[in-house]
Image (cartoon, rainbow, N blue to C red; front, side, top):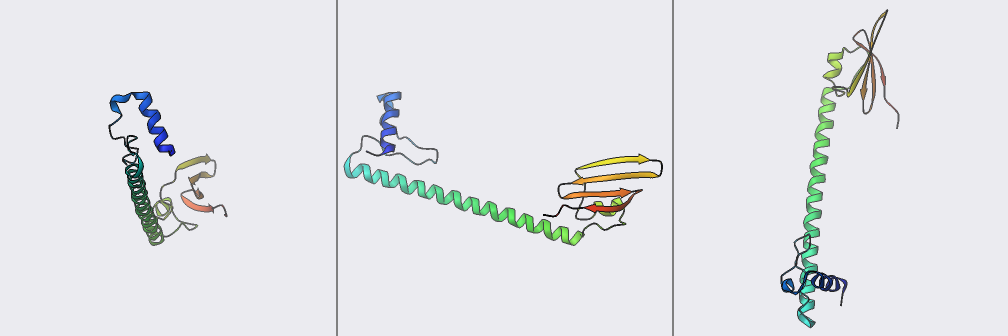
Amino acid sequence: MNLVAVLVLLLIAAIGPAVAEERLKDASGCELPPPSLSGKEYWAAENAYHDCIRAALDRMQTELQRSEAARNAAAKKARAECDRRGGASIGMTAQQVLASCWGKPEHRNVTIFAQGRSEQWVYPGGYLYFRDGRLEAIDKPEH
């Protein structure tokens, strides 16, 4: 007797004989072989169960591949848009940087001092530094 049959028998013993002939299904919706079967009938049901599991796994793999393809297409589109918009260059205004591939920062740190105003724009991929409204430095970590 295999492990599935043993688990089904233990389940039936725990919940009572009233549900013994109900068809039990696993999380994938595949019907477990009823414990009342024996011999060839049991193994035919066991094989049908395994076929159902394989089909469920195939569906999951197809969905995973479809999802990955959609993510790759979105990333490719984002890269193309970034290439179209261009990167940041020293001397750009804040508005020009916002319209560039860098876009809106996650966070901004502003410092006001006697000679003017300084800003640090924080991005996941680095930092941009502005002085008096013009891009003064670009800090991108090397990987």
